[in-house]
Length: 159
Picture 1 (tube, helix red, strand yellow):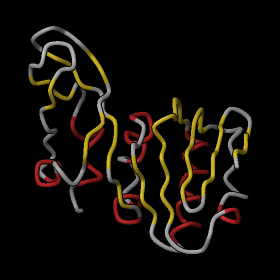
Picture 2 (picture 1 turned 90 degrees about the vertical axis):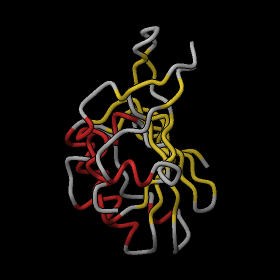
Picture 3 (picture 1 turned 135 degrees about the vertical axis):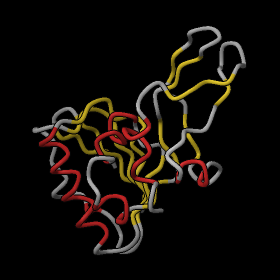
Picture 4 (picture 1 turned 120 degrees about the vertical axis):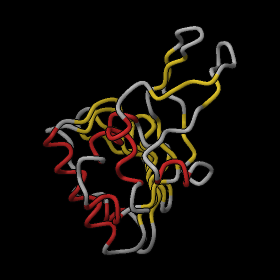
């Protein structure tokens, strides 16, 4: 089932939710918990392109409502969402993040992208607030995080 709230599409398949679009002042997650089975839920946000402060407030309300029902797993977290989540301490302990996108840049060829970072594979590195080096899809050289580590990695400090 797919529901559209303004500029945000929500696809629910069992205990899995896929979000695509903008999480902003026109987004509402109020009905979403009722569409999900009781227990754990997995949310894929790779398609989220924008988040503003009101959207973040709604996101926090959603996470609180869902975690009362069971574990909340976030996978393929969009870079625009992971940077916002890093500013909210509560989210570091209330969800499990399995993977996220981050802005990377290749010093060798200048290529920029937002590759997927696997949290389990890089857990020890992430805990130290260091971004893993990832291979450039253009030239194969090691890419570096293209922003301050705190913007992406603070949430992993205590996990």
